[in-house]
Length: 208
Image (cartoon, rainbow, N blue to C red; front, side, top):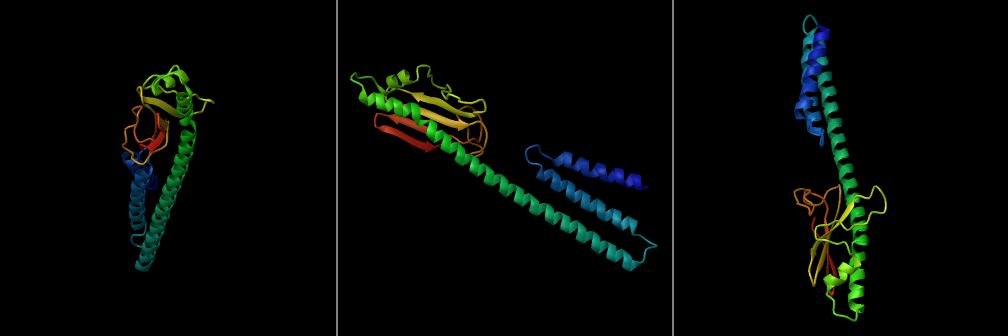
């Protein structure tokens, strides 16, 4: 009988977790499995402490069972809140790091273009000068030069005309402000910065 109770408990808890679990966010599955485990524990306690156990012993056992189950759920909920807070803090730090790297690398070809444009003696356009600075540039192409194997940043040439050059920078992972934002390369929810070059200078803005 004890072995049967064990099998039923394991099957109920495991099945609930698999039904409600998520590879990205495991907490919904864990919470559902915890509720099933608590109900199973209560039923098992009531079954185990049935007559001929004295009534007082059954009441004490029921109270202890409720206290144990309640404390377990409380600590689980507290741990979930702490984990989510830590995740949020790490993502915030990651966004700051990505922003710093992108804002330091995106201006390089644009400022070089602006400098050459104003120093030139001919009448080449901003777009023509940019093509001289970045010869292999093409709209939609990632022009970021990776300095190491794990470099996951992307800098795309979003637009190129005679009077304007637009670069879009984004990391390969992380999250921006809007999780449903459509990034330039087709991905969703990533941080994205935009730098626009004209003859007057370079402007920066955050897309997400």
